[in-house]
Amino acid sequence: ACFHLAALKAVGESCQLPLDYYDNNVGGTLRLLRVLHRHHCRCFIFSSSATVYGTAPAPVTEESLVGIGISSPYGKSKHFVEEILRDFNHSKMGKEWAIMILRYFNPVGAHESGTIGEDPSGVPNNLMPYVLQVAV
Image (cartoon, rainbow, N blue to C red; front, side):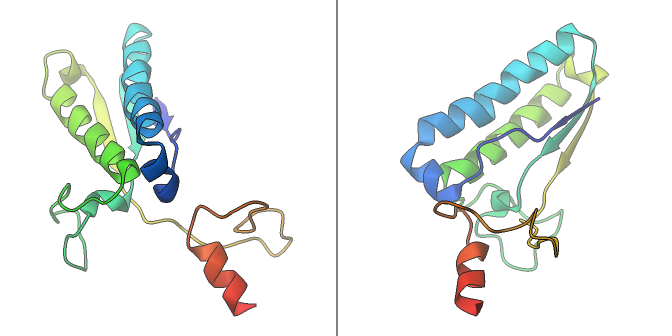
């Protein structure tokens, strides 16, 4: 089985470097699927994102519409991969596969030791480090 977690993930950066995000997140997934198929690995778990919900009204559920109003290349790349996986799974070759898509919001937190969590050394790519700086 393959749990595909590798992706560029900074929403703001994706607006500055959209081709890098599409190449890495979409192109990289296509290359990975081909390698897995060649090596007879047919179980694939894709780490997507709640950004695929775009402007869907809250609260979102698994039945909520996706792909409408996605505002960043990062979110669009995750949505494109989900669509590719659906198309592939319906194909003759893809019928042999078990494919799962996981969508989630960014978890926030840190270990009390400070060795893991939201404390970036450079410019943060997520909102939470800014919120935490204001709280301190």
